[in-house]
Amino acid sequence: MKDPDCIAFLQWALPRLQLRWPGYRKVRRQVCKRVDRRMRALGLDGVEAYRAHLEADPAEWVVLDDLTRITISRFFRERDAFTYLCEVALPELHQRVAQKPIRIWSAGCAAGEEAYTLAIAAHQQNIPLRIVATDSDEHQLVRAREARYSAGCLKELPPHWRMSAFEQKGEEFVLRDELRADVEFLRQDIRRDMPAGPFHLILCRYLTFTYFDARLQRQIAERLLTRTIPNGFIALGKHESWPEDVPGLVEAKPGLRVYRKL
Ligand SMILES: C[S@@+](CC[C@H](N)C(=O)[O-])C[C@H]1O[C@@H](n2cnc3c(N)ncnc32)[C@H](O)[C@@H]1O
Image 1: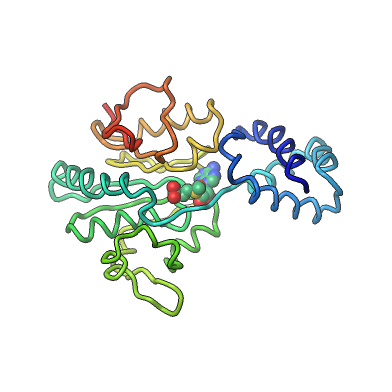
Image 2: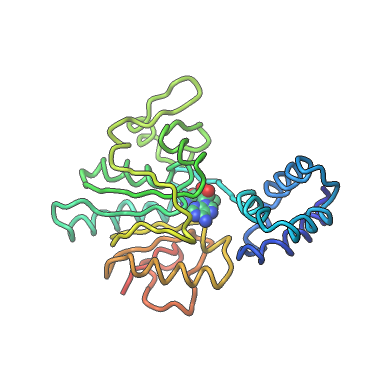
């Protein structure tokens, strides 16, 4: 499929799935490849035929929705944001909850990279926590539970963290068992289900506020707020922003897109 054809197709299809084209612009090739494969599997010879197929068969939208999932992640992704979360937010929350575990939700957790980053940081500081990590993609959750990663996935992690938290087996780095114990992985589609909470910290990075349309962003933002304790944190990706028309948060540290619930 030619790039302009795929762009035109995505600009037509994504809003119908409550997704937004600007979020996909840079990563569109992944989705285009999958759509191309799907068209071939259906014996269709172009996007026009695939559009007609979608219009005739509502079940195909569910298939297309799955094809749009972007699963890129890394440990310690965006160093300054994670430094703040690990060195400021975790110790502060620890003080506040006394001896109890800090409750954290990683939404759209991919293969567990951000959840395990926090588990490693907390372990180093003797801070007890419980993390619920959710994703709609079963394949990502299988990877998360296996907790085996390539070196590339760990490249932003401080080297001494990597040495202490992982065991190298051939080309792979395997997370030590004691660091997995505090993380529970659940299959959930954030558009329909969320863990009940309340949480001291929610990470909702590079999912809702990149790929979902404005209305869905608003709905999910409101639900995230109801699951965050007062003065708790909500962390987005540094290239994302909280919907202006959903009040109730202030930036904890400007520029990091880590917010504090009022
Ligand atoms: C780009 S990754 C971001 C991973 C991680 N949060 C980060 O920032 O590094 C987005 C993740 O969200 C998951 N996802 C996509 N749509 C979802 C949905 N509707 N509900 C829950 N998870 C979803 C994908 O499977 C993927 O693992």
